[in-house]
Length: 299
Image (cartoon, rainbow, N blue to C red):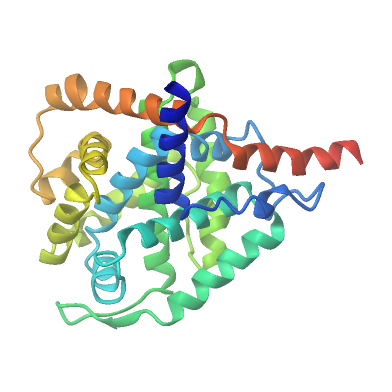
């Protein structure tokens, strides 16, 4: 019975996050290839991006935080099919993160080139009359910074305490993640925790919840194709609210008292994450990447 349950969890989660096919060839070869950004087991980026609960809660938090930039939100609202195909949008995001983190150099270049091509087609005028384009370097910096800040917050909240990053390792995480954004065209990317917080403070006057942002967050928190999926997403998005800065929760009109966030949301998300991780078992993607990297030591 437990084996069957584990297989169902693994199949459902793999279908939701990866489209059903892990495409392990992106990670397994060629032997000795260091990957485009030279990320190795034990590096902060590997540890953060390899922790399932932190990435799930951090990913939801990132989407909420990113929505507060009116130009970024306008691009998503006017060009993305996330409402019609939210799983497809999720698959694309997961593919980019896992491939640039754990994949071969060629696979990472391929997904970066794909995203850059897509960005050239995403442009228009926001409801406030300002023009936007998805390949705007400053907008790319916003999207990246909101994302990695949220991933790191998820890891530091949900990874077992002995596995959490030290302050120096948190800075190293930002430093290692920055080239991924720069490869897409971002500039002046924060390379330390304090730089990221200063960056958010500078942008704070530009950030607010538009009707499209409020609608997208409501859609996100209610998403689910089945009752079980809606339950899991609801628990994880509630937990992701606790990863947001206080001002971001206020802007989004989310009123969830601190005792609820810490005494209810966090334990439930921890339990859900452990169940999902048990169902998935050891990461086949990370195992394939380790095997590829081991080729350099054996050769």
